[in-house]
Image (cartoon, rainbow, N blue to C red; front, side, top):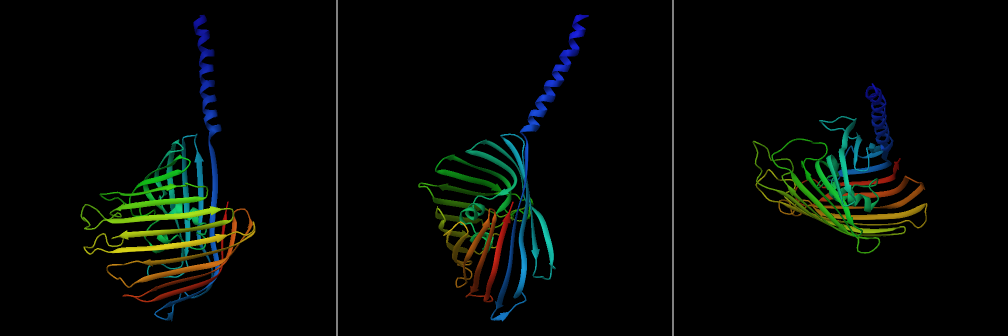
Length: 347
Protein backbone atom coordinates (compact mmCIF):
# COMPACT_ATOMS: atom_id res chain seq x y z
CA UNK A 1 0.00 0.00 0.00
CA UNK A 2 2.84 2.36 0.84
CA UNK A 3 4.48 1.69 -2.54
CA UNK A 4 1.28 2.74 -4.32
CA UNK A 5 1.10 5.87 -2.26
CA UNK A 6 4.69 6.77 -3.20
CA UNK A 7 3.93 6.48 -6.93
CA UNK A 8 1.76 9.64 -6.97
CA UNK A 9 4.32 12.05 -5.50
CA UNK A 10 7.06 10.52 -7.67
CA UNK A 11 4.96 11.09 -10.80
CA UNK A 12 4.18 14.62 -9.65
CA UNK A 13 7.86 15.33 -9.09
CA UNK A 14 8.71 13.93 -12.55
CA UNK A 15 6.08 16.01 -14.32
CA UNK A 16 7.15 19.12 -12.40
CA UNK A 17 10.77 18.47 -13.38
CA UNK A 18 9.83 18.16 -17.06
CA UNK A 19 7.73 21.31 -16.92
CA UNK A 20 10.53 23.11 -15.15
CA UNK A 21 13.04 22.03 -17.80
CA UNK A 22 10.69 23.11 -20.59
CA UNK A 23 10.17 26.46 -18.90
CA UNK A 24 13.94 26.90 -18.54
CA UNK A 25 14.45 26.12 -22.22
CA UNK A 26 11.68 28.54 -23.17
CA UNK A 27 13.17 31.21 -20.91
CA UNK A 28 16.51 30.84 -22.73
CA UNK A 29 14.88 31.49 -26.10
CA UNK A 30 14.96 34.98 -27.57
CA UNK A 31 13.35 36.54 -30.64
CA UNK A 32 14.49 39.77 -32.28
CA UNK A 33 12.78 41.67 -35.08
CA UNK A 34 14.75 44.13 -37.18
CA UNK A 35 14.67 45.99 -40.44
CA UNK A 36 16.62 48.19 -42.83
CA UNK A 37 15.41 50.70 -45.41
CA UNK A 38 17.33 52.23 -48.34
CA UNK A 39 15.67 55.23 -50.00
CA UNK A 40 16.65 58.15 -52.22
CA UNK A 41 15.21 61.37 -53.59
CA UNK A 42 17.22 62.18 -56.71
CA UNK A 43 17.45 63.53 -60.23
CA UNK A 44 18.68 61.06 -62.87
CA UNK A 45 20.15 61.87 -66.28
CA UNK A 46 20.35 58.58 -68.22
CA UNK A 47 21.49 58.38 -71.84
CA UNK A 48 21.99 55.65 -74.44
CA UNK A 49 24.19 56.67 -77.37
CA UNK A 50 23.68 60.30 -76.39
CA UNK A 51 19.87 60.13 -76.28
CA UNK A 52 18.01 60.52 -72.99
CA UNK A 53 16.06 57.45 -71.88
CA UNK A 54 12.87 57.12 -69.83
CA UNK A 55 15.00 56.34 -66.79
CA UNK A 56 15.75 60.08 -66.59
CA UNK A 57 13.83 62.40 -64.30
CA UNK A 58 13.03 63.14 -60.67
CA UNK A 59 11.65 60.75 -58.10
CA UNK A 60 11.74 59.12 -54.71
CA UNK A 61 12.75 55.45 -54.67
CA UNK A 62 12.68 52.90 -51.90
CA UNK A 63 15.40 50.74 -53.39
CA UNK A 64 15.43 48.12 -50.65
CA UNK A 65 13.49 47.21 -47.51
CA UNK A 66 14.65 44.28 -45.37
CA UNK A 67 12.56 42.84 -42.54
CA UNK A 68 14.28 40.20 -40.43
CA UNK A 69 13.34 37.86 -37.61
CA UNK A 70 16.05 36.15 -35.58
CA UNK A 71 15.17 33.46 -33.07
CA UNK A 72 17.69 32.04 -30.60
CA UNK A 73 16.71 28.63 -29.23
CA UNK A 74 19.78 28.30 -27.00
CA UNK A 75 23.50 29.05 -27.08
CA UNK A 76 23.97 26.68 -30.04
CA UNK A 77 20.83 26.75 -32.17
CA UNK A 78 19.19 29.73 -33.85
CA UNK A 79 17.31 30.63 -37.03
CA UNK A 80 16.95 33.69 -39.26
CA UNK A 81 14.49 34.74 -41.91
CA UNK A 82 14.90 38.01 -43.82
CA UNK A 83 12.47 39.28 -46.44
CA UNK A 84 13.49 41.74 -49.13
CA UNK A 85 11.36 44.19 -51.09
CA UNK A 86 12.26 46.37 -54.05
CA UNK A 87 10.24 48.65 -56.29
CA UNK A 88 10.50 48.45 -60.07
CA UNK A 89 10.18 52.10 -61.07
CA UNK A 90 11.28 51.61 -64.71
CA UNK A 91 8.78 49.33 -66.50
CA UNK A 92 10.00 46.77 -69.04
CA UNK A 93 8.17 44.49 -71.45
CA UNK A 94 8.03 41.75 -68.82
CA UNK A 95 7.86 43.81 -65.64
CA UNK A 96 5.41 46.64 -64.97
CA UNK A 97 5.70 49.08 -62.09
CA UNK A 98 5.36 46.89 -59.03
CA UNK A 99 6.80 45.92 -55.68
CA UNK A 100 8.65 42.60 -55.58
CA UNK A 101 8.81 40.85 -52.21
CA UNK A 102 10.88 37.73 -51.71
CA UNK A 103 12.92 35.81 -49.13
CA UNK A 104 16.59 36.79 -49.11
CA UNK A 105 17.79 34.79 -46.12
CA UNK A 106 16.25 31.79 -44.41
CA UNK A 107 18.61 29.53 -42.50
CA UNK A 108 19.14 27.45 -39.38
CA UNK A 109 22.39 28.04 -37.51
CA UNK A 110 24.44 25.87 -35.16
CA UNK A 111 27.18 27.75 -33.32
CA UNK A 112 29.58 25.08 -32.13
CA UNK A 113 32.17 27.69 -31.15
CA UNK A 114 33.29 31.17 -32.18
CA UNK A 115 35.51 29.51 -34.76
CA UNK A 116 32.94 27.09 -36.19
CA UNK A 117 29.44 28.26 -37.09
CA UNK A 118 27.29 26.28 -39.54
CA UNK A 119 24.34 27.71 -41.49
CA UNK A 120 21.99 25.74 -43.74
CA UNK A 121 19.55 27.51 -46.08
CA UNK A 122 19.84 30.85 -47.83
CA UNK A 123 22.56 32.79 -46.03
CA UNK A 124 25.19 35.49 -46.61
CA UNK A 125 27.78 34.60 -49.21
CA UNK A 126 31.40 34.83 -48.04
CA UNK A 127 32.52 37.91 -50.00
CA UNK A 128 29.92 40.58 -50.87
CA UNK A 129 28.35 41.16 -47.41
CA UNK A 130 31.82 41.12 -45.85
CA UNK A 131 33.00 43.95 -48.11
CA UNK A 132 29.73 45.88 -47.64
CA UNK A 133 30.31 45.91 -43.88
CA UNK A 134 33.80 47.35 -44.28
CA UNK A 135 32.83 49.84 -47.02
CA UNK A 136 29.88 51.23 -45.04
CA UNK A 137 28.01 52.97 -47.89
CA UNK A 138 25.86 50.21 -49.37
CA UNK A 139 22.85 52.56 -49.17
CA UNK A 140 24.53 54.84 -51.73
CA UNK A 141 25.79 52.09 -54.05
CA UNK A 142 26.27 48.32 -54.17
CA UNK A 143 29.73 46.79 -53.80
CA UNK A 144 31.42 46.39 -57.22
CA UNK A 145 30.79 42.63 -57.68
CA UNK A 146 27.12 43.00 -56.80
CA UNK A 147 26.79 46.14 -58.91
CA UNK A 148 28.27 44.52 -62.05
CA UNK A 149 26.64 41.12 -61.59
CA UNK A 150 29.81 39.15 -60.80
CA UNK A 151 28.64 38.18 -57.33
CA UNK A 152 25.63 38.13 -55.04
CA UNK A 153 25.04 38.80 -51.35
CA UNK A 154 23.16 35.58 -50.49
CA UNK A 155 22.60 32.10 -51.92
CA UNK A 156 21.13 28.73 -50.98
CA UNK A 157 23.42 26.08 -49.55
CA UNK A 158 25.57 25.35 -46.50
CA UNK A 159 27.95 27.90 -45.01
CA UNK A 160 30.67 27.48 -42.38
CA UNK A 161 32.18 30.61 -40.88
CA UNK A 162 33.92 31.76 -37.75
CA UNK A 163 36.73 33.57 -36.01
CA UNK A 164 39.17 30.91 -34.78
CA UNK A 165 41.72 33.53 -33.65
CA UNK A 166 41.77 37.25 -32.88
CA UNK A 167 43.49 38.05 -36.18
CA UNK A 168 41.69 35.56 -38.46
CA UNK A 169 38.14 35.03 -39.69
CA UNK A 170 36.81 32.95 -42.55
CA UNK A 171 33.68 31.91 -44.45
CA UNK A 172 33.21 28.95 -46.83
CA UNK A 173 29.99 28.05 -48.66
CA UNK A 174 28.75 25.21 -50.84
CA UNK A 175 26.15 26.98 -52.99
CA UNK A 176 23.45 26.29 -55.53
CA UNK A 177 25.07 29.02 -57.62
CA UNK A 178 21.90 30.67 -58.88
CA UNK A 179 21.56 33.32 -56.17
CA UNK A 180 18.98 33.70 -53.42
CA UNK A 181 16.15 34.31 -55.91
CA UNK A 182 16.74 30.98 -57.62
CA UNK A 183 16.68 27.99 -55.21
CA UNK A 184 16.73 25.49 -58.10
CA UNK A 185 18.45 22.11 -58.31
CA UNK A 186 21.41 21.16 -60.51
CA UNK A 187 23.93 18.33 -60.83
CA UNK A 188 26.76 20.31 -59.26
CA UNK A 189 27.04 22.83 -56.45
CA UNK A 190 29.53 25.70 -56.40
CA UNK A 191 32.14 26.61 -53.80
CA UNK A 192 32.94 30.10 -52.53
CA UNK A 193 35.38 30.95 -49.77
CA UNK A 194 37.06 33.86 -48.05
CA UNK A 195 39.75 34.30 -45.41
CA UNK A 196 40.56 37.62 -43.73
CA UNK A 197 43.39 38.78 -41.49
CA UNK A 198 43.71 41.76 -39.15
CA UNK A 199 47.47 41.91 -38.49
CA UNK A 200 47.11 45.40 -36.99
CA UNK A 201 44.19 47.05 -35.27
CA UNK A 202 41.96 48.58 -37.96
CA UNK A 203 43.77 46.90 -40.88
CA UNK A 204 41.95 44.15 -42.82
CA UNK A 205 43.47 42.00 -45.57
CA UNK A 206 41.27 39.44 -47.31
CA UNK A 207 41.24 37.04 -50.25
CA UNK A 208 38.38 35.10 -51.80
CA UNK A 209 37.74 32.38 -54.39
CA UNK A 210 34.73 31.11 -56.34
CA UNK A 211 34.44 28.03 -58.57
CA UNK A 212 31.45 26.29 -60.13
CA UNK A 213 28.87 25.96 -62.89
CA UNK A 214 26.52 28.67 -61.51
CA UNK A 215 23.49 26.37 -61.44
CA UNK A 216 23.81 25.58 -65.18
CA UNK A 217 24.78 21.88 -65.04
CA UNK A 218 21.66 19.71 -65.30
CA UNK A 219 20.66 16.24 -66.49
CA UNK A 220 20.36 17.52 -70.06
CA UNK A 221 23.05 20.24 -70.09
CA UNK A 222 26.77 19.75 -69.42
CA UNK A 223 28.30 23.26 -69.69
CA UNK A 224 31.71 23.43 -71.40
CA UNK A 225 33.01 26.18 -69.09
CA UNK A 226 33.40 26.66 -65.35
CA UNK A 227 32.94 30.04 -63.73
CA UNK A 228 35.70 31.18 -61.41
CA UNK A 229 36.56 34.37 -59.53
CA UNK A 230 39.46 35.64 -57.43
CA UNK A 231 39.03 38.53 -54.96
CA UNK A 232 41.39 40.70 -52.95
CA UNK A 233 40.71 43.42 -50.37
CA UNK A 234 42.81 45.77 -48.27
CA UNK A 235 41.12 48.25 -45.93
CA UNK A 236 41.90 50.38 -42.90
CA UNK A 237 39.51 51.86 -40.37
CA UNK A 238 40.35 54.02 -37.38
CA UNK A 239 38.21 56.58 -35.63
CA UNK A 240 36.11 58.25 -38.30
CA UNK A 241 38.39 57.21 -41.19
CA UNK A 242 37.68 54.38 -43.64
CA UNK A 243 39.86 53.73 -46.67
CA UNK A 244 40.05 50.61 -48.79
CA UNK A 245 40.31 48.91 -52.12
CA UNK A 246 38.93 45.78 -53.75
CA UNK A 247 40.09 43.86 -56.84
CA UNK A 248 38.44 40.98 -58.69
CA UNK A 249 39.32 38.79 -61.64
CA UNK A 250 36.68 36.47 -63.11
CA UNK A 251 36.71 33.85 -65.87
CA UNK A 252 33.71 32.57 -67.84
CA UNK A 253 31.30 34.12 -65.32
CA UNK A 254 28.62 34.96 -67.87
CA UNK A 255 29.35 32.27 -70.46
CA UNK A 256 29.35 28.95 -68.63
CA UNK A 257 27.14 27.39 -71.30
CA UNK A 258 29.06 28.71 -74.32
CA UNK A 259 32.27 27.35 -75.83
CA UNK A 260 34.10 30.69 -76.05
CA UNK A 261 36.16 31.74 -73.04
CA UNK A 262 35.96 35.20 -71.54
CA UNK A 263 37.53 37.10 -68.67
CA UNK A 264 36.69 40.16 -66.62
CA UNK A 265 38.41 42.20 -63.95
CA UNK A 266 38.02 45.42 -62.07
CA UNK A 267 38.80 47.39 -58.94
CA UNK A 268 37.06 49.70 -56.51
CA UNK A 269 38.70 52.33 -54.28
CA UNK A 270 36.87 54.18 -51.53
CA UNK A 271 37.47 56.58 -48.66
CA UNK A 272 35.28 58.24 -46.04
CA UNK A 273 35.94 60.42 -43.04
CA UNK A 274 33.60 61.48 -40.24
CA UNK A 275 35.16 64.72 -39.02
CA UNK A 276 32.53 64.90 -36.26
CA UNK A 277 29.94 62.53 -34.78
CA UNK A 278 27.36 64.30 -36.94
CA UNK A 279 29.06 64.95 -40.29
CA UNK A 280 31.38 63.27 -42.76
CA UNK A 281 32.51 63.04 -46.39
CA UNK A 282 32.96 60.06 -48.72
CA UNK A 283 34.08 59.17 -52.25
CA UNK A 284 34.53 56.07 -54.39
CA UNK A 285 35.92 55.22 -57.86
CA UNK A 286 35.51 51.96 -59.83
CA UNK A 287 36.97 50.73 -63.09
CA UNK A 288 36.17 47.41 -64.76
CA UNK A 289 36.53 45.49 -68.02
CA UNK A 290 33.47 43.21 -68.10
CA UNK A 291 34.48 41.22 -71.22
CA UNK A 292 38.25 41.24 -71.82
CA UNK A 293 38.31 38.50 -74.50
CA UNK A 294 35.02 38.80 -76.37
CA UNK A 295 34.65 42.59 -76.14
CA UNK A 296 38.09 43.84 -75.02
CA UNK A 297 37.47 47.57 -75.57
CA UNK A 298 34.40 47.61 -73.33
CA UNK A 299 34.94 49.55 -70.10
CA UNK A 300 32.80 50.47 -67.11
CA UNK A 301 33.75 53.59 -65.15
CA UNK A 302 31.96 54.70 -61.99
CA UNK A 303 32.46 57.24 -59.22
CA UNK A 304 30.53 58.89 -56.43
CA UNK A 305 31.21 61.62 -53.86
CA UNK A 306 29.24 63.41 -51.22
CA UNK A 307 28.54 64.53 -47.67
CA UNK A 308 26.89 62.42 -45.02
CA UNK A 309 24.99 63.20 -41.83
CA UNK A 310 24.38 60.87 -38.88
CA UNK A 311 21.51 62.64 -37.08
CA UNK A 312 21.04 59.73 -34.69
CA UNK A 313 22.03 56.11 -34.21
CA UNK A 314 21.00 53.86 -37.12
CA UNK A 315 20.10 56.79 -39.38
CA UNK A 316 22.41 57.98 -42.20
CA UNK A 317 21.56 60.67 -44.76
CA UNK A 318 23.90 61.42 -47.64
CA UNK A 319 23.88 64.13 -50.32
CA UNK A 320 25.79 62.63 -53.23
CA UNK A 321 26.54 62.65 -56.93
CA UNK A 322 26.98 59.37 -58.83
CA UNK A 323 28.22 58.84 -62.38
CA UNK A 324 28.36 55.57 -64.31
CA UNK A 325 29.58 55.15 -67.91
CA UNK A 326 29.73 51.96 -70.01
CA UNK A 327 31.47 52.54 -73.33
CA UNK A 328 33.82 51.19 -76.00
CA UNK A 329 33.72 48.00 -78.02
CA UNK A 330 30.41 46.68 -79.31
CA UNK A 331 27.16 47.73 -77.70
CA UNK A 332 25.53 51.02 -76.85
CA UNK A 333 27.34 53.70 -74.88
CA UNK A 334 25.33 54.28 -71.73
CA UNK A 335 25.73 57.09 -69.23
CA UNK A 336 23.91 57.64 -65.96
CA UNK A 337 24.35 60.64 -63.71
CA UNK A 338 22.41 60.90 -60.45
CA UNK A 339 22.36 63.62 -57.80
CA UNK A 340 20.29 63.88 -54.66
CA UNK A 341 19.71 62.54 -51.18
CA UNK A 342 20.34 58.91 -50.19
CA UNK A 343 19.41 57.48 -46.81
CA UNK A 344 19.30 54.37 -44.70
CA UNK A 345 17.34 53.62 -41.54
CA UNK A 346 17.79 50.45 -39.53
CA UNK A 347 16.15 49.15 -36.37
